Image 1 (cartoon, helix red, strand yellow):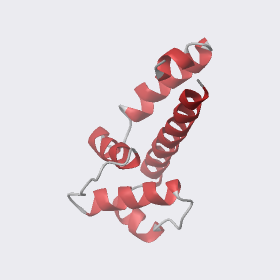
Image 2 (cartoon, one colour; image 1 turned 180 degrees about the horizontal axis):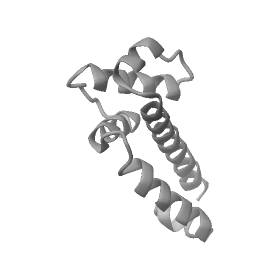
Image 3 (cartoon, helix red, strand yellow; image 1 turned 180 degrees about the vertical axis):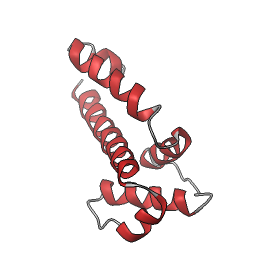
Length: 108
């Protein structure tokens, strides 16, 4: 089963997921390419930041993933608070989906 097959068991869950994908993961105020870089890193891919903004985004994602200290001063040099909310939400959502889907697929 795919993630959408599982979500479709509860149509409102599938609709909520699709809304998040459309409005936060694929669009929003943070560049989609930057979010994709973070998502690849969260999936375990070795990624190399091209600049300090990307490095800050990857460090923010790592802090969220491992419940670590956020480098606030450096983050605020590169991102506004609304951008940090969006990037943090996208990171947390992606991590949650990854963990949930691995758990679900392990149940079968």
